[in-house]
Amino acid sequence: MSRGGYYEWMKRPPSELSLRHDYLKAEIKRMFDMHEGRYDEKHILEALTKKINEKSIYVFEINGEVVSMAARSRSLLKTESVSLVYTPKEHRNQGYASHIVKYVTDLILDEGRTAMLYTDLSNPTSNSIYMNIGYMTYCDSSVFVKPI
Image (cartoon, helix red, strand yellow):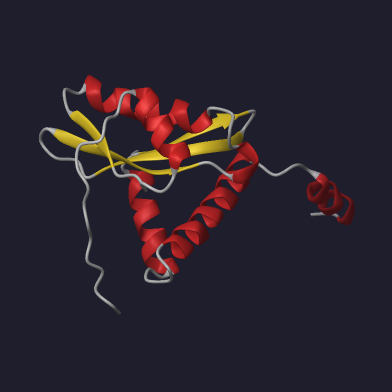
């Protein structure tokens, strides 16, 4: 590559693949922080790669920029969960999470399954979004996290 070609290449806007990689890096960090360091980058990357390969992660893009995401998980015979709902701070309060959660929920319902999700009861924003879509409170649950 010539010097001029290199500098021209450096001026180009990031590719869609590069933007997706940046988004996944941010998602890995978010998941690590969310799980208070109990999952290392290797395990988070493996989980995300598996979901991408299974085509169970969905992103909402506007002009090539990812503005929200959600995933399908815990697939059983009659139920499946919506999970990993995330919208970057700069894109919140614009309805993107509602749109992607509704989309993934409809995919599950169209397959004849019951859609479910777990939510943080202390987050009124997400709870309002889910109720507006049609989710209702069914039960509380607790988890045991084994110390590493």
